[in-house]
Image 1 (cartoon, one colour):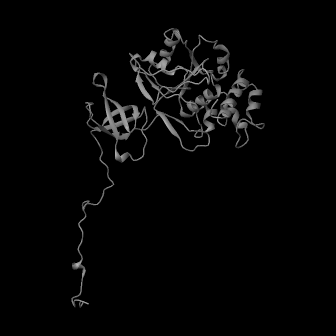
Image 2 (cartoon, rainbow, N blue to C red):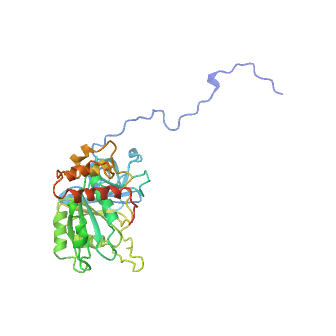
Image 3 (tube, rainbow, N blue to C red):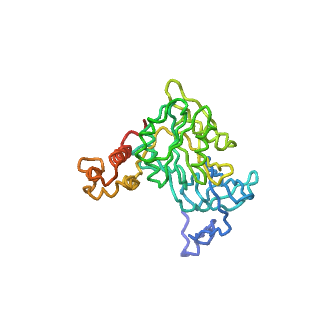
Length: 342
């Protein structure tokens, strides 16, 4: 055995490995990106964001990715963002989204009414266009009701668009929504360029509208008529199941020709979960009924025997349409707990 050296060891004998990541401590400060260019997200595809930047003749498309400093913050179609890097829009270029501006409105849905995870569909739209066919496939009132609830909760104005009016009379179906005072437009299937489309253009003019509807209702056909260069794929309805085929795989924002309005086409939906909705916001949109809730017991769901709205309507304070309006309100409230599909 070798004899141990008599020399005492000290800290100078310990080799310190250099810090290969640098000696400066990591800073929490983030760059201000004062040179960032404002833009609007028009499509999202697998981590790449098609963003429209510039104004007038200088408006062009820039492909971008999300900057690391955004963390897990989601970016959706309609978001107003700040972009840095190569914003020329040249082929093969890639910029970075470094900021997402505060959203004015957010359209959300959940997988079902028990799912706590919200999915943001679109940001900064001010009008929700609920598209439904009158036949082939048959309309699904409960799904429409749920879309109306989502619109009211998001602070968006709803618009009901009924397609394929050449197949059946739209009157009886529209009677169900008359007490809600929901604006509506009716179009035919075989001649989409008639007065119905002109009325729809007028309703969309100058607004940011998101189109939502069940598969096969003619949503993409309408988009192609409104924005011919969109070339959205259209499908057919299965004769056996009565269901449409998904033809739009992702949301896309499209500028209306000769107008400052936008339409956002979304994939067809079969369900619309409302786990995120605060039901008190729905009542707020019934201005003629809301004062009557002062008579309700604490925690009232407005759909129970002790609800004060019944006395409010019976007194005539809600106006001549009070009973029908209360029925419509309760139908929307029940839609929150009804099955997500029709």
